[in-house]
Image 1 (tube, helix red, strand yellow):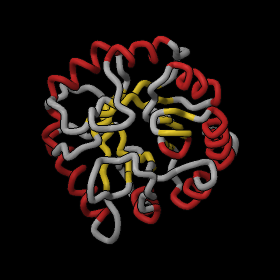
Image 2 (cartoon, helix red, strand yellow):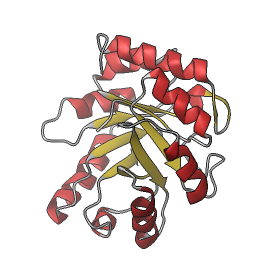
Image 3 (cartoon, rainbow, N blue to C red):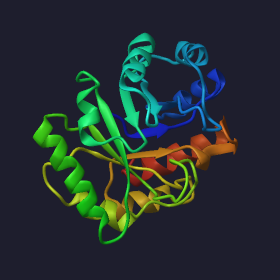
Image 4 (cartoon, rainbow, N blue to C red):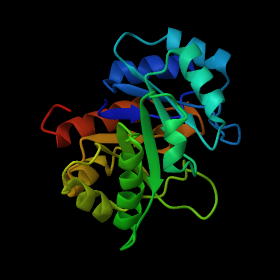
Length: 221
């Protein structure tokens, strides 16, 4: 659904800079404990500043399914990002709305964790549109700047019949090209890697990130 997503947008001017740089998705964070959290009114202002064609992703962490559905519908979100501990059957409660499930996995057990999760989703008939691989954390649910397990991403990419993988976790302009070449992913996501402070995006860093990722894909996403 997208190739380059910049997450944790809190200002309309940042959304405009992201679109101008060539990213094709933004993330709007509705997790109240995040320093990048926004409410519905701020989200509307940001969305109104976007040009057509930008994928609007709403990030939720262990929220009530009815609240997620309401927020998705009232804002016209294109994709729901579940970034908490939501089990496979939780996806059934979202009424068929498109979902990207974030999974924090690494090491030798990581691929088994991911495969088991997706197998359960298939059995239930609620396979996510995309899977986002983030770095495991002892505390919190992301936005740490820690690298995800690139070897796990590469292993996932070699498997057939899996939802498209989005690589997140500590990506910035200095390492995103290396990450793409090392893993073969066709979609990347960053938040902290293009910020001057939490929730405030640096337009030059965003542009450099987009250029680096696009170059790694041979000039196109």
